[in-house]
Image (tube, rainbow, N blue to C red; front, side, top):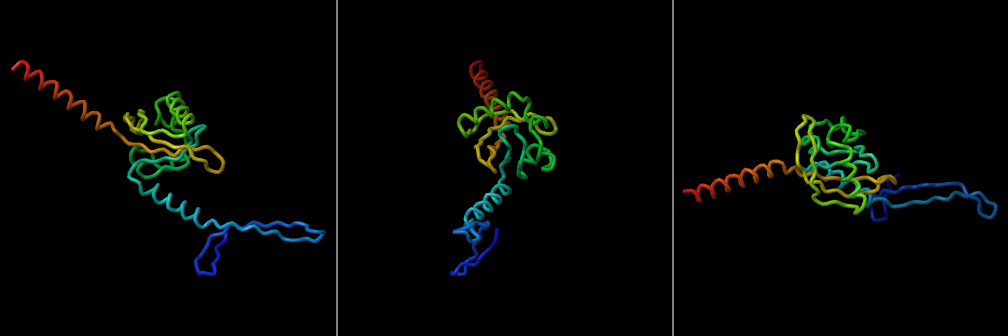
Length: 178
């Protein structure tokens, strides 16, 4: 990759490759140049959004779940350090309770290419079980099927809803009796 200044003065990122070829018996150099400025900018934007997001996000391989990257919100949510997660499988870490749960989830994702708000039970490093909504999308990274997944923890919302329903039931019962 190289950076060139266009006639307009704007800097452009270019991927250049070259090779020797023979044309009509004469050795020549063939040079191919591709402007990658926009895709590079898009990649930079993605990285910023990924790391700035307050929601836990992970990038993992589809075939075995191995984490390729996680954001700080993911680290904070589940309690493992980033370096403990990268290169590891969530089942081996104990994040997923069982390999079959993860395999079922991955099969649904493989079938549709994306999942939206699929409920799952995941564990923190401290062993606390969390009820989460997982949204995920299949992406290709260097020819390998990968998953970009986002997690929303709904554990407290569900506990609050259950407590409210219990209170409402007790109130109805008290009104019926009283």
